[in-house]
Length: 142
Image 1 (cartoon, one colour):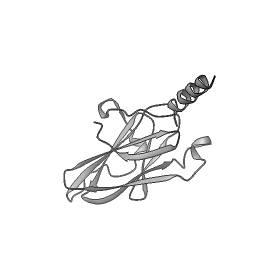
Image 2: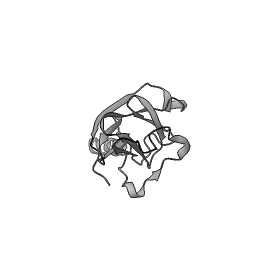
Image 3: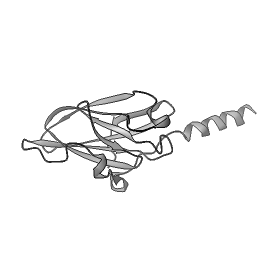
Image 4: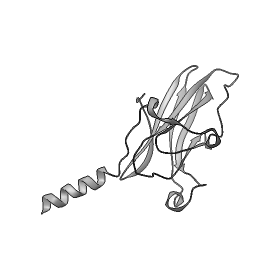
């Protein structure tokens, strides 16, 4: 009986995690949900790419993508968004979409990562989650 209960608990927790999506399979975030950093800056710049994992965790809820403390896009599961930012140091974050509703807007969660870009550099990030909640992390998944 303990074995059955343990196996069931593991299965339930595994069902709550998300799965990374290769960038070539991700759907671009529609333009009406991207708010900034779409035009090439006149000064040297790099590109920040944020992809959101697939999976049922948080499905049906957009998450906000932040750049330097400002909402830059609203991203859904399996989507990707690219931002052109001046070379230098930036903060890339994700949080609850304050324009969302229901269970998707019950907290003020904000998690950030630093991103230092050289001219022409591309930095990849992924938004994913598990039983501990959502997070944004650097990524090597192309």
